[in-house]
Amino acid sequence: MKSIHIKIEKIAKSLGKTITDMAKDTGLNRNTITALYHNKVDGIKFDTLLRICDVYNIGLSDILELKGLQKTEKEVGGTFFSERPVAPFYAWMWFMINNRMDTVFFGNNTFGDFRLFVKQDNGLFVSDISASYALSKYVVDRYSEPKELEKLLEVNREAADKIRNHYYNAVEGKTHKLGQTKLESYSTELIELFLEYASYFAFLHAFDTGFDCEDIKRIAKKYKMRTQDILILSTPDKPMFHEEKLVREVDFVKEFKKKHIPDDYLETYIKKWVKHNKEAKAYLREYQYYSAKLSGGLFYAEGLLVNHLMKIYTQYSYYKKRQKHILEKEKRSKKEVQKVLHRLKIQSNPLFFYKELVLLREERKSYNKMAIYILSAILDQLHSITTIEKTYLKYLGYDEIGLLLKGFITKEVLKDRYENGVIMYIDDNDYKVAFGKEAKVLLDESRKKVNESKERVLFEGYILNQGYERNFFVYSDTTIEKTKGKILVIHEYNKTLTKKVQVAAAVVVESADKNSELEKIVHSLEIPCTYGNGDIIKASKGKSIMEVRANHGTARIIY
Image 1 (cartoon, rainbow, N blue to C red):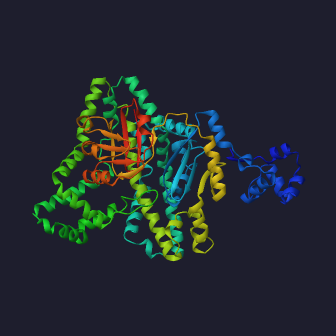
Image 2 (cartoon, rainbow, N blue to C red):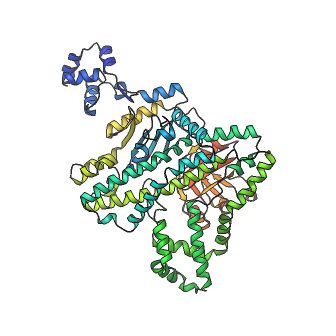
Image 3 (cartoon, rainbow, N blue to C red):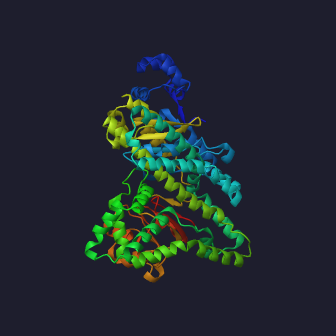
């Protein structure tokens, strides 16, 4: 299935022109016009199409037709856009495996006609709903039983362990010691590893289109579940990577408290401890990836740890309760689940798979952050060798590292990609990349064919404070008492909402304006918070359960 179709034959007939006529009019070689006439586009330059447009006063959309999206639209409910900050160098791997997933584990399923447009670190994803639904259904049908799911998880553990080891090497600065030849071969080895890992975990993206939400509704109806039952049976029961990190930090502060450190010496003591203590060094080695994002971002260093430990020390009672809540999560969940199963008169949790899906997605997020850390270290070394700014290096393709080191890819080329954009798309079951004007045309064509016929459940945004929460949600007009322990959904923050934010389990903000006062509150109390999740209030009316994926910057309406 070709994604791009050249309509020169149709245009020639409408203008009453022969191939020879068009060659004379445009000044192009007759063989070039002949190739375009028969839709043979390999090797054709984009400027060639622009020349034809100029001569006959037509638009590029009159020449280009995106067959893939049109077909999808007719067969099922179409495609949709999602938007998030992203740098191509950190995202290629998830795109490249689109049609490289292991058929033994996923059959012949793919993500279909999937596209990613990136310009100045802003990414637009165009997703194929029908393909995502088909992949989601296949995974649920095959892996919803615990034993079958374990088979899928087991196959990728070796790759995950290798990623962690390479991450430790990057933390220790080994990447920065590589010369040109070794850096190129090492990068090739890493890319293959990342692609292997991604090929088994990419399916998680398919559920963003909402298959899980519809299936949860079906299961709930079948077993006559109450909304509270759905929440209990689908909420993860094990600590996630951000919670494990907090547990370790509270343990550090617990030891500080035993020493009765004078207030005026506290910061100096913690700085020295972080700099010289073996446990602190091991902790930083483990979590430097923590703040990594698809667009890059800062990494977790000594200064951030000092500030965080100071905060926990001054609010120790609060954080001690948080730690206890995390450590007792599994025991508490098992008790609650058993009560629900007993009342419903069933033996096993019918929402088990969706509970595990959340844990799996957050685990994948931690390894993806490690991969970004490693890739960032490679870019740092490429910058050291070439002096090209990292801002532009992030627009380098994985297969172009050798070309860059040999001088065939220049700063000007990468800067142009950054300023004018790149688009990744699938053509004949292989991924391809287009730049500049061509990328813009493909994006515009994609926009024309988008049809959000499925109810939207995913709302992209930005991270204000990392974490995760699945819970009932309320709006800003709800009382403080009813907000306590719930997800607070607001259009934008103002001081009248301070007390409600302080008692909320998580906060979702529609407005894309970053509020420093809100950021201070959620950081202080470790409240998961996203912002810029536009239109979520209107879409969530009449619903009850939401998922705040503040390690990702997204929020989802579950039920």
